[in-house]
Each structure stands twice: as C-alpha cells, then as structure tokens.
Length: 393
Image (cartoon, rainbow, N blue to C red):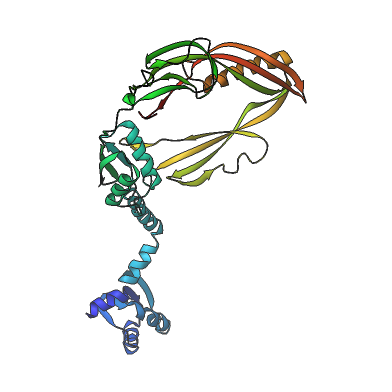
C-alpha cells in the first residue's frame, strides 16, 4: 500500500555527488525524507529513490553539504500527467477522431424504399424529409422506426402498410399500396361541357348524344354532348369525345426600348465553405464579392464513399465581375421580339394538342420609353371537359 501511495504522489531516482554524502543523507532523514534503493556508485557518488514531495528538502540542504543533485528518472502519476501535457496535439487528435467516429456512426447515410410505385415512393421520401429524416443528418433526436411508421400511415392515405427498419446508418422501408375498389370513373354517367367560349369547328363524339354542330358559337359551361342517350328516358352513359373550337386570346407586351446587358470581363473571385449536412463553415474567400457588381455561380461537391453520399462537401461560389452596358433597340426589332415572346408564353398555357392558327397585331405604339404591343391569337383547341351527373338529373 505504501508503494502504491508513493506511486500516486510520485517517485524520483536521484544521483548525489559530493564529499559529504553521509552527513547529507543523515540530515535528509532527520527532516523526514524517505530514502530507498540506495546504491553507491563510487566514493563520491550514490544513487537513490525518494518521494517527489521530498525533493524540495533535498534542494534546501544540498548547498550546506556541497552536494550536487541530478534527477535520473521519475515515476508515478505526476510524471505521467506531465508527459501527457507535452502530447497535447496527440490528445486533441485522439479526441477529434473519437468525435468524428461518433458523428459518422450517428449520421443517416441512406434511405431505401421498396415495394411502392415511383410516385408513392417520392411521396414517402418527401414526408420523411418533413419529419427531419434525410441523408446527411444526425440520427440523434430522430423519431424511432415505430413512430415513423405510424406517422407515414397517418399522413399518406394510399399506404396500406409500411415497415421501417434501421440498419446501422441507413433506413430500409418496405411498403404496400392500398388496392382501390372505387367505381371506375370512366363508366359513371357524364356530359361533355365547354371549358371556354369558342366557335365549334370539328366534333368527334365517341359516346353520348351530340348537342352542338360545326360553326355553333358556345359559351363556357354549355353542354356539348349529353350522356342521356334518349331524351326523357333514364338511359345514361359516360360521354367521351373531342370538340375542337376556334378560341381567341389577347396578349399584351410592354418592352423597354433601352435594354441593359450585363457583360463580364472574365475576372472571377471564389469563396469556399465546408458544408456538413445543413451547417456551413467558411474556409477561404468569404469576403469576396462585397464591392462592385458580381454574378454568382455556386457548385457543391458530391463526395461518395462506397456509393454512399458523404455529409461532408465543399461549396464553391464564383463571383464574376460584371459591367452593365445599355443599348437601344428599334421599334421593329422589339415588335419581332414581342411577337415571338408572346407566342411562346401562350403555347406554354395551351394544351399540347392545341394549335395556333393565326396571329394579328392589334396595336403597336410607343409610350414612356416602352413599346406597347397588343396581339390577338386564333387557336384551335379541344374545349370539351367531363362533368359527371346522376341519373336523377
């Protein structure tokens, strides 16, 4: 027990040199010093072990006896602690490695969904993301699999069952979609009605009784074909077919005569951030782009390890210096640009099968430095939409 106690407080091996070694050692003993493992090296030198706390006493009386003290080694907790303090970088690296391993082991790396259609699978992934469950995030604080399973079943009516299993750093889900036994909507009695005003140019009714003819002008909501096959009899079918009508669209464009173009001279300054999940840490160049006019382009690295996406990425933002240059277009050029732009915008609003037959400029004028352009388009499109009815209608 005494040796263990000395080990915790520290033990030193000291060499003593001098002509008055014996009186020096006797004086140390009288002062309460404990001397062990005493060995004589020669007539004027000995080596011995002492307690660390006795070192102060030896230093105090060494001058009186003209002895030279040399520390050969030290053992015990105080020396071990001092040695570890000299290895601070090693300790920091050790604890940093533990922290990184902890983060990697508690990070969700992948989510795999099986057994569902692509649309329903996408819906499940969106719901998981709203719950805070997505690759790259820490699993600490996430809902447990049973809770996630219940949330998904409550929030997605099309799911009959879904199993959620956590395997290491990934989630595996297997779902079963509900089999619907709803009435086939293509067999329910219905009419075809006009979705907008227009003049009928062509009809093709597959099922149902036509109610309009070519060149008839119809208004929105008017019945184009009825599912009641015989008037005043309760015989109904699901109406089906197309009614192509000529419709009209008026489009207005206001185009500035003076245009501003942003030009770059190729000068670029970049800034870099370390991105860990949703956390961004600046690395270099975060002060870029604070002066002058710049156009930004951002790129995020996509690092993968064994096919698994890493939560660590480098985000690079390039700032391109731009110089605005003004130029003025002619009225004719703006008319051509406005017609093309209006036509593209209208085509995006129309159905794929719709066809623009004619365009006409109703107005072209200059107002307050802008060219005002009003266009009229004639379009052939299917205006028939299904409206379900009951047999009592």
